[in-house]
Image 1 (cartoon, rainbow, N blue to C red):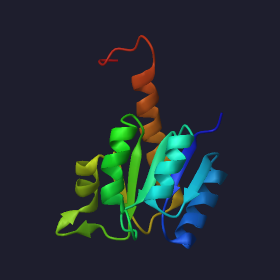
Image 2: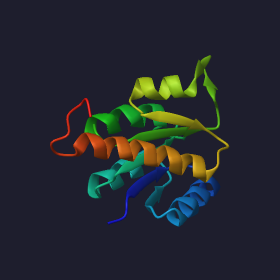
Image 3: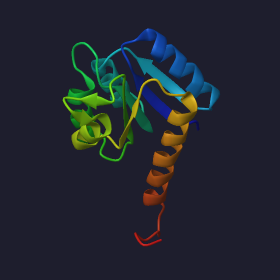
Image 4: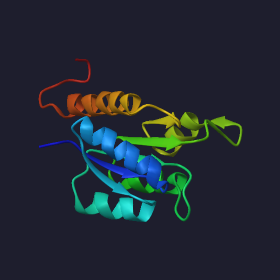
Length: 136
C-alpha cells in the first residue's frame, strides 16, 4: 500500500507542483487548499504524514498543527512556508513548538521534501516495530 500524504497549501501552483513531485516519488497524495479540508481528509483516510503551509487564509498552519497533533499524535507533520523567519524566530522553531516534526522554507526542491518525509516515516516505523527497545 502506498504511503498517504495529506498536502495542505492554498497556493494551487505550489500544491500542484508538490503533488506531481510526490506522486512521481511513489506517494499517494491528497492535496487540499486549506486546513479545514486537510482535517477532513485526515479524519476520513488513514494518512501517513501531513505537509502543511503555515500561511493560509482562514485557519492557518499555526492553528492547524496543534489540532492535528492532538488528533494524530504519531503522524509526522512537516510545516512549509515562504518565510524562514516569523516574528523574529526561525520557522522551524515556531513550527516545532506547535507540534510539527520539522519545517522547510520555500522555495525548496521536491527531493528535499521527499528526503524529509522518508526520514520521519523511517523513524515512525522504527518506533512501531514490535519487540524493538528504545535503545536499539
